[in-house]
Length: 92
Image (cartoon, rainbow, N blue to C red):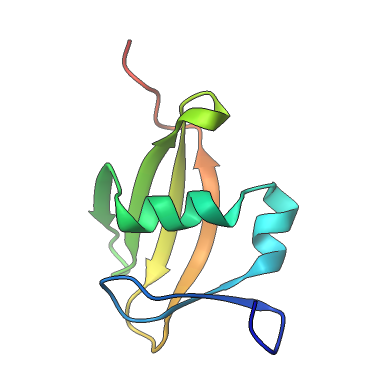
């Protein structure tokens, strides 16, 4: 945790990413899942607004897909939202 106590800073193979802890606490999403999704997504999409969507199934959450929407146009890059998507289902 940094000095301001409100942001998560992760250095990955991309620019620094800042994320409000409030979103994670409210949605009960562990930071480790966020890091795992950013570092090794199963799928990436670029939205019409230019935001990048990182998607990964989280086995600990019944294989549901975590979607992280990142705005790469600002520095440091900002995660706009994090949520479990209902549109995607694991194929059986």
